[in-house]
Length: 152
Image (cartoon, rainbow, N blue to C red; front, side):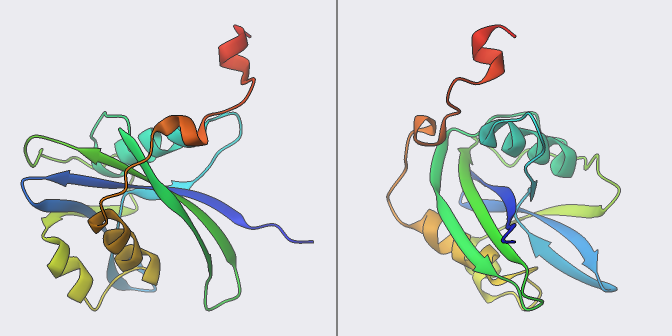
């Protein structure tokens, strides 16, 4: 049975820099966008907001949608990643709430693209996607007939 991992990620931009999180994978520090798995009973945008808070301490919502990325990891795990964007006016201080996150960094897009410790190729691909002019409304990935919208 095909059961891809549904994940969300958020490109956070401020003052020419992008926010990345640093975590340990197999004893090695790696960089990623604030990202994680979609949980039951949450919308994609809600998941992006939750992951942003858990991994950076920032309480903010995505402002736009950037695209969907489909990827198969080296261990053959299939992923479908929904990429969101958020523009801030300044590089905000961070305070990761998730103990798996060691720290956060504000880096230039070029520094991320040239880093040799990205968690996956999706990190650089997300930066390249963000560098394109296209920004899509969140309604593109809105939930249909969602319980919260019905007052349930």
